[in-house]
Length: 172
Image (cartoon, rainbow, N blue to C red; front, top):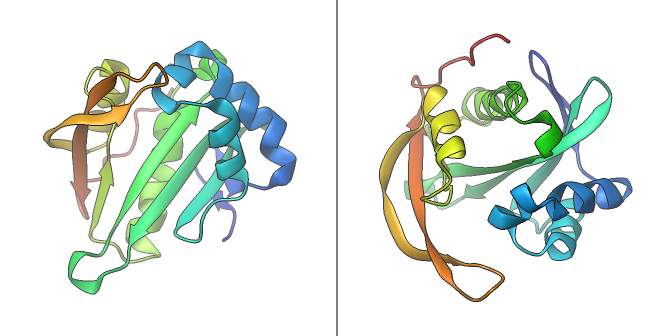
């Protein structure tokens, strides 16, 4: 994995040194609501399974979030998926959009993927708006897709983006 530089962010491979900061980000109620157990998620983000790439999102030399990609390697179905969490203090500043755009560009141009997916909770309106603004389109609702920490389930929205549909984020 290499460092990937965007217009405003720098994505660098996550490591053990990021554990405390990732826990802090993932424990914020605005993030934990969507990501689940902060300890488990932070541990996995710092030492991901072989099929996941995990990056620290740096903005002005501060780690403000986590972004990950995973690949479906089966040749006939090859594509990549993305996931992102930004510390709430940096929400609505265009940082998430730049991070997603930066990683999506890399996956399409360098890794040669033709299709990307992202799967926000169906009730995460802010995330859905953000993903739509850079070219992701709704594909369908996945019913009872994820189990929340309280044991309840919620729907997910599958969104995808094809090569050529990626839109640069609005400058801020």
